[in-house]
Image 1: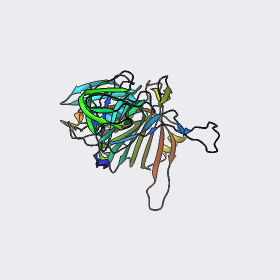
Image 2 (image 1 turned 180 degrees about the vertical axis):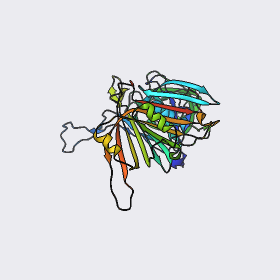
Image 3 (image 1 turned 135 degrees about the vertical axis):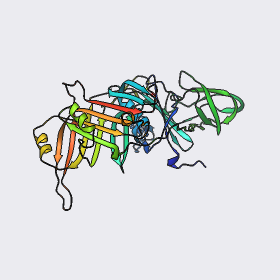
Image 4 (image 1 turned 90 degrees about the vertical axis):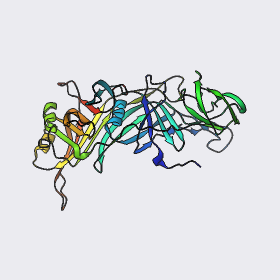
Amino acid sequence: MANSLADKSFLALKPQVAAATPILPALFAPLVSVNIPLDPAFSASRAMKGISWESDDLLKGKRTIKGDIEIWADPDNLAHLVNMVCVKTSTAGDAASGYTHIFDPGEGKSYSLDIPRSTYAQRLYGWRGTKLSFSFEDNKMKAKITGEALGQFYAVSLAVALTGAGMTSAVFKTDYDLRPADGLVIGDTIIVGGVEVILTSVNANGTTVGFASTAVTSAVGDPVYLKAQTPSFTALQEPLYFGNTLVGTGADSAAADTAAATRAAATMCEEITAEYDTGLQAHPGSGYTGPGVLLNGVRTGAVNLTRLFTDPQQYQKWIENVKQAITIIATGRYIKTDLSTSEKLTIKINKVKLMTNDEPLEVGQYIMDKQAYKMLYDPTDGDALTITIVNRTAGTVY
């Protein structure tokens, strides 16, 4: 029996060159949680057939594959999640001093993902992020990406029996999808008739796969699965910590940067969360059971801070609708020839305004400014958000 312990899973991922063209995801990241279900949108067939039941069958609707991925935010893997919602504008540096990757709002990269379930895997392709959020749990930074995929391969049915020695191809049933092999690539290992075979081809019609001659016996209707890869984690990965994170607020971005640069000038915060939403929209395309393309919509963002009350200044800024800027800097432990070359995440938000500024009173508790900021575009700076990551991963990966 397969070991179905969830802790044995992981995430395999890699950015694609073209959104609709899957690739073998050969980079590996540890997971906290993942839930990306397929929804075939089945509904009752409401045709009148002389019966008093609602239906005698279910019909397929518009397929969606969307959900959430959570990881502890180590700088190397975090950059992949940022790459799904932003566009990387530059990379500089080297292995000794760290690679500095700069991301700005734009069309994020499409990814191929493998999510192992026991010895099997769910392959997603054309995956793009719509919402990226940062939070802290027990001192550790957690990153959560919500997104959607163009398609997947997980399990399909055999359409033509395999009869033993000399088998070199498998044809899949098209009852659910007219292109059931979409998502598979050369080099994948599938399990058919209990036998593992490595793919040497996937035909252009998305119905048939080829492999080297093998003795496989399997009947029509038997399941075909994608085998999970064996992960290879090449570097020690550790999340960013709340204790190494500074928050700077100021009248503009330069002032916020200055405040976040030192512990003495930074804002003392008890809780920090940030969220960026691309407004991703799924658009149908001819020949697709699911979306044909995923495109950014209207971008939004939010920051929430909880900090000790010192004076009514933040209330004044809220009621007067005053512009502020926020810079968040989280420093990591690797690279570290000195602090200027440590691993680092910098989130620069050029313009925010307070949506709410609560100062609750509770017996035995200190008074807090509980602040919810709206992220806004700044016409003066011509920018809204910049995310910079210094890590050990060369820029060719993102």
